[in-house]
Length: 316
Image (spheres, rainbow, N blue to C red):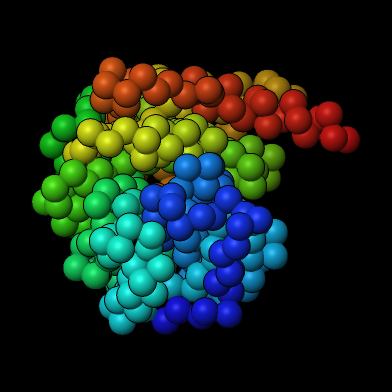
């Protein structure tokens, strides 16, 4: 449900005036909070999270920019209540939510959790919030190919796991909604998300004997892409959000081990129980670049991770 304790009162000293378009960010976490803070330049933003302590932290630090709420996207009643409360205070009296950005995470849960958060969450937003514009953050894991093929924005999708099938079904719910956007995010990394560095340093990394193409996007670039989509009223359909790519696992580990003065990881078979399903594909995001002029600041994951290591050195 909604915990109103963490809602903030609007007043004339803040930029959250009700004359601004109303935006709801569902999942104001690692990705959603930086996006919410940037959208606050042009929108009245309601930042929704799953846990009360997260809402309290947002309210404590960013009360002048966004309104923090506790909302579970799997809870129909909570979304219905959220819409009723927000639209009662909307300046235009049309009872509309101008923009919903849905970037909730399952927290690494099982298939039931995936279904609740991604699929039921999408159905609930469509039914209860009925936003004028809707951006849904999905994943490039809907392209579960292993043959090295190119996967463009409109490419066929393929699922080899129940989680990927759930994501595809959720995408279809969104894509059937007029004007809605599916933003398929490649592997995210950045501040506090440095898995390739950690795996090399810890000795857990394995250089797979089969060549493997990697698909990543830096968190900062993912936010900038979502911002471009939010500010492009005519945009709709599916967009792949990925850097310029072209990096193999071997190239990544070679660059990291050279930079860290460590030996290359041992060669071996891929780890069957890895959290992410094995894929070998090239995800290409032409629509963002060609139609909307977006380009990533970090061209490849190697560029982004090298900057993280540079900053780490400077702080020592």
